[in-house]
Image 1 (cartoon, helix red, strand yellow):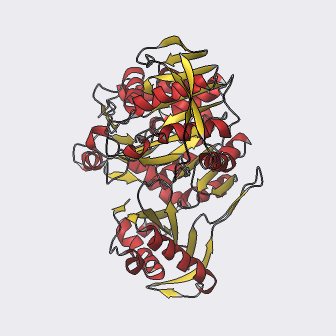
Image 2 (cartoon, helix red, strand yellow; image 1 turned 90 degrees about the horizontal axis):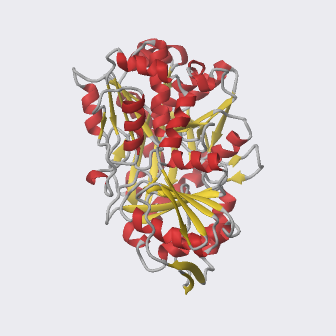
Image 3 (tube, one colour; image 1 turned 60 degrees about the vertical axis):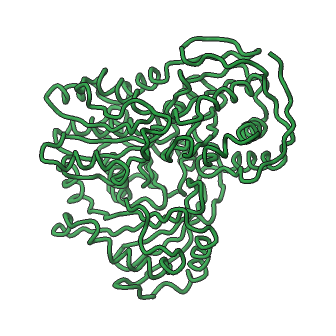
Length: 543
């Protein structure tokens, strides 16, 4: 086993986004592409000699080969230990927990989250720091700078190491420890929730359908929900991780998890439905006959947190990403706790969690989390809901109806315009920015603009400033539209338009979301000249 130094050169386009670097799988398979990026991460964190790293991913296509490359590069760099999930698998929240539990110096997570997988799908890699959370903006910038000046990388000349079985082996001077990817995470969940109460719920005949979407959460959900809590065998469907996610799109929303939604809207529907995504950090909650938006889900968890053992003493505070609906703000106001508005990206919650300012946080893109890890956590959110249902002895619909009566309802939807020409998308955003000062008082369809700005975040913990985080347009009456270019796509630009309308009239809390949001959607489309600038008469996906 000899370390080799391989000459290389910078490769364009290796700038990480909100969750690391994501590209089409063939791009990552290209000559030096993965190696350049890994070497840049190692350089940006000051080298890895003597350090301990965690390694794992969601099992998508190329995960196994990428893991072997990273192991050999870690060994060549002098890492003391690499803790890898068996088979190269680790859900993102499980990786975060393992980094924290073992006091690791960071971790490399192989995933493109909810993006499709397979030979022609997407692949991704992100680095999480010692706190278990995604790399912050300063480190992300250093990684990008390293990708622009790299000239060589080191890798060990060695055969593949067996990561299909748990145990300890040696790769050069580096110890490779292969662990059960589920065990530590499952033990953590048992400390956070009342497992006896949830088990009693299942013993009473309560029926669950959890769609793992052929992704990494399957083994976790099976172990926890079926084996530990007693949900009937088969409650977890699509439970075996697949390199191409069964040919599907592992994004837990009503579009890509349509089978689950259909099952939950049927006359013989189970009592509770849920889904998770590619790497296990997102969730979708569905009750019998009712879909719960991620924004509403965050608000319900905040309102009922004291029912759950981990938060029996109450919440220090809550946080949401700026595009997420303001439903949780209403809960925070009544509870008398702080509510922070951050840019999109879980790394912004990390500082608030580490500083003890918040206990619970979430994003509209199906991500919810707390202070137990530094990532969003799909299965954790499902267990939180199940514990609330068990404690209150109420259905999901009953819980939602009571919540809306108490706090009001924030009708909400997101329109995604995918693979838009990048210049056209940037032009739309630039045109909006140029008009911000003049928009208040403007009539758009049935609505009148009350305020307009571009969100900038001033981190209250470290003082950093993040600008250009999305254009916000508020209308008279409290409705709003948010425009933002997403950093999770791999082709062109993804324009996201977030639409929200609050309602407190008890007679209107049960109206269809589409009808309530339509005036906001029409006003937003007119103000942004959406069809003219994008060539799209309608969004590709509406959730």
